[in-house]
Image (cartoon, rainbow, N blue to C red; front, side, top):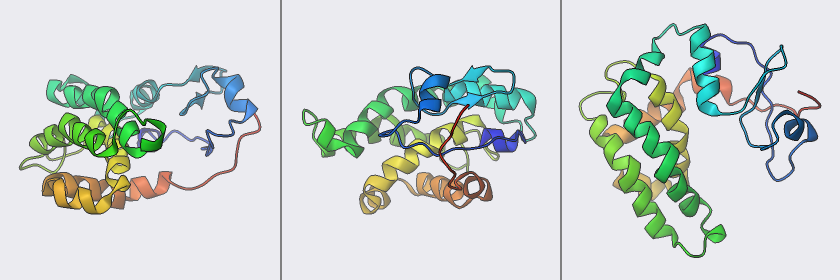
Length: 187
């Protein structure tokens, strides 16, 4: 989403992580996504680094102001830390038999969804009246969480979180970047 907002032209490629293309492994030995291969041969293979790079090129909506917002940075740290851990245990419960899915869901909800709800009280976005970088960085993880059991999420998440999530899911920006593509042949 940051690449699109920054008007950086990219060739997006969908990757099946169960069948990693050789080009992905060659570009980034850790073989996780995303990987951004630049024309000069530089590889950026961390989401935050890609977003920082893109917004340094062009940031028409001042999303980067979020880097200076301590409450928003706390939400981002929660997302990238404990929430991801619990989300995996909830979403892929069979892979983590030591953690039951309802407990993982409760932990994930407590770690991020509740603080996000507080942050969104009386405002549509994490930073206030307009989106900032944390909105687009946190949104995909909340979308995954909500998608595991949409009925449970609708019953338990605050209306502010549901409205925020619906805004992003329904946004033209999100729809533009969710187009399917062919596997890579090289980076």
